[in-house]
Amino acid sequence: QVQLVESGGGLVQPGGSLRLSCAASGSIANIYHMGWYRPAPGKQRELVADITFGGRTNYADSGKGRFTISRDNAKNTVYLQMNSLKPEDTAVYFCNAQIRSWGSDWADYWGQGTQVTVSS
Image 1 (cartoon, one colour):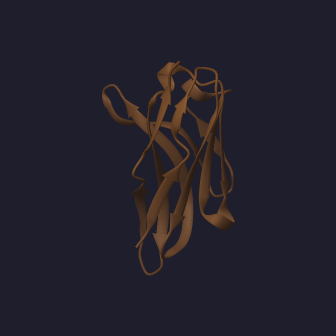
Image 2: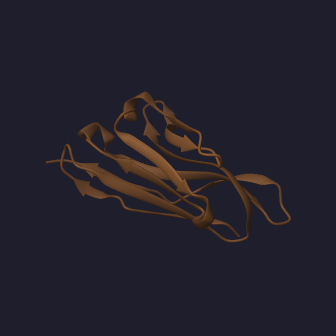
């Protein structure tokens, strides 16, 4: 069984920084894509940033220049460094990963979410 566990959310003032972490655990053979999503009007969730196993990154326009996604493949962990945070960044951030478990096919997994609140 595979689990994604997020941490690092919290309350921060505008202009501040937070670092989110998401660790995958369980019977994992391979992890391809890992990313961060948050709810958006008219959508279930929108992409914040994602990263492939090889390190290729992709960012939503809202986070370009402020957010940095990275991963430690040895630890099956993805990070999101968020700088210059704005009140509109307030949301629950969900971790997502495409994982192949031993003896199974590729599947999408989601974490439980971590709350980020940007407020003075």
